[in-house]
Image 1 (cartoon, one colour):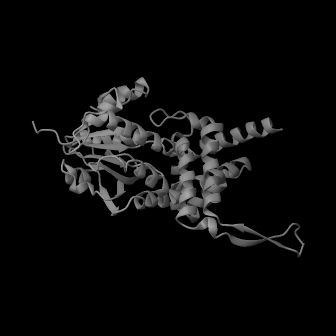
Image 2 (image 1 turned 45 degrees about the vertical axis):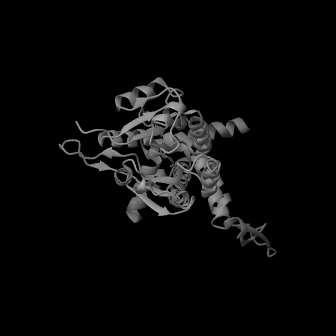
Length: 347
């Protein structure tokens, strides 16, 4: 039997973490996680995927050559804090490198803040900023002897290229479809933010458009016109609506991170563009206001996903157990229903 390659710690084992864990295990890596704070279902799924469970972050740090942080954006700082605490407690030889890859959907500034918190630690504790673009890894040809994997793109940046890591580094970087895009911390997270802004921002537009059309009784007509005049957009909108509900809670904070990215790095907070406002249809006097501020735009998108996550039944959905919102029409109906309940409670 071929000896195992590196040991990779993953925090945490959600949909993406589980997909990456399965890909690693299938290619002779040992994967460990601390799922002591997760549900029994999650722990059972981890064991079934041949992921080794450890009881403490100290053990995770002690046993890992690499640690991948893959959590909702709101938890990114907390995971980094746990890894630092585990590193301090672990009896780990300081000459043995440990690579910490922050692969969360966070702004470049947040990534830089997290990396800065590691700066007082030994140089062998090496931090990379990153982002995952695409869905979880999965086998696409289960009927054939040699599996073919779909893989997302993992973009990273920082001073320590993974391909130069001494323990399976080049192999791991290739296996994970990793692209090193810059030598400093931040650009990889920025790339992820810009991609997600278009991808998930469009999902928010689809939510509002389909919900409003359903409320006015014209959703079938909207769908038929989309399919006739823009079939690719129709497919993207309907696919996005169906896939969105279990992820909406994660995207609330992600949109806030995007808002900050557009402000801090795109300059949109300082570049409000002027428009005219008429108080009455025929009024000639106009006053100036600003619009086009990136932060305001994506905080609005965050509010859309917060509505889905907290105000609708769709927010209770789990990826592995879908019950409602399995069609675009059903998503729109659930949103209209929640809007009606919200409106009646406000009156």
